[in-house]
Length: 581
Ligand code: ATP
Ligand code: MG
Ligand code: MG
Image 1 (cartoon, rainbow, N blue to C red):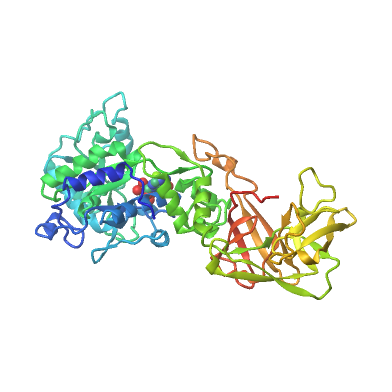
Image 2 (tube, rainbow, N blue to C red):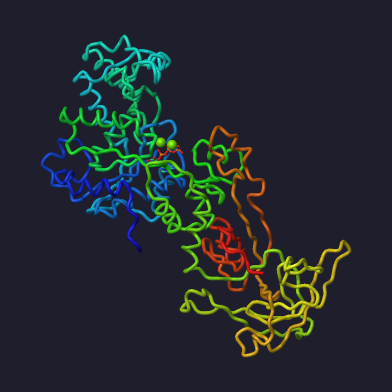
């Protein structure tokens, strides 16, 4: 594999390594407060990154980008990437989401083992340390309990052009704030009645520095800590502490957190001065999120699609969730390839969905078996071929891989062909079957069309042809007759009936997620067509098995419903090049 393209994050890491910025970092074998880390051995990992999803939904292709970046950087620079469940928001989080996230990251091909340790963490494991940090900030005059209502706090925050106004509680004595914080923790106050805020600068041009809230009261049961806590740390307070406790060196996040970086640094620097954290401290770096056309990734919108039945659950093959992509037939390698190709950048841009299809083709083309499928069958009768006779035809399993060998299937008097490979009156440039024309049956004989039979409504129900006996593919006479068209076929006696689900994009609009659009109105009414066709005998319909069906693209046996006896195939992506007529 070629060396990954360089990007600004790699440049930052390389500069940090060259400067020895993290050379003296301590690692105690597990995350913990400074006291544990003092005297610990030097960190064997040259860098530490982390993937910190909130367990409030299923992961999607955007998360895959963050996963590929964080785990990929750790791998490339002899580091470790921590798997961290950022579970500081009890109302929306559930164990089933935790399980789904862990499965998705593993399926994508990553693990969090490093230097003899399983680096799997929960933010809720640090609640005690976070609380200790909150009291330390109060004692240092850097935080206070504010008794304004949430509305009053919002109103007094000011705007981008107007400075904020100090709360009347800002000047209260540290002892009073500490007592109130303890009462908050003990459950003596209702939700929203007070909050702990940092004391920074209500006139800061950065709104995030105007005394951000650190802790709020939530009488809610947490999926891991139960009812131990009724105050919960805000993301902006919790996240830097989580990073520092875990010895993260490079905390990589998306661009919308850029304005939070001054607070990230303010908080960690102060906690280090107070002796609660060890230096060197982590640093935050922002990159542009992955924005793919024709999808939505907001959890709220995905949830709505599922809840309102626009799709068939979180793993619907049309969704950009990891479970949906997997069921559609995308491979971990194809998703990694997309993430690699789109790099890491500092500026937002749209990535066309077709790049994902292209990555899939590149992954599957060299390694996937071919097979014939007839999607919309009509019968072709070879009138000069004896009834009851069959002979074996063969084709390469994979034209790129001679070692894969050949597959065999019978030729017989009655065949299935694609209905639109025959027309009675051909338009200009049509080289397939019409009365009087000759085509090659791929891997079989050249046949000459002699006519067709129609039902009372004029629909073609059978096509007739005669074969030219000396023209079988792979025999010396194969090229004696030149034809312009080649079509695929299956012997009726051997073809295997299959359900085939032709998936298309879920939205007709390239940007359903943008600019306050009604994304439901952008749904593609034809995002799936379910048809009954036939596949080549010997096709393995075991759940998850992928094929390239000749002419049609990449398909996968549906992992929820397909069985060897009742094949169901999902179309993952079409072939780039359309079938040569
Ligand atoms: P949503 O906005 O859909 O609720 P989120 O961004 O809040 O998702 P988290 O669980 O907090 O979801 O995300 C975990 C990590 O994945 C974060 O570091 C976040 O920045 C990253 N991430 C989420 N979406 C994208 C994306 N489209 N591109 C790159 N990284 C992303
Ligand atoms: Mg989030
Ligand atoms: Mg988000």
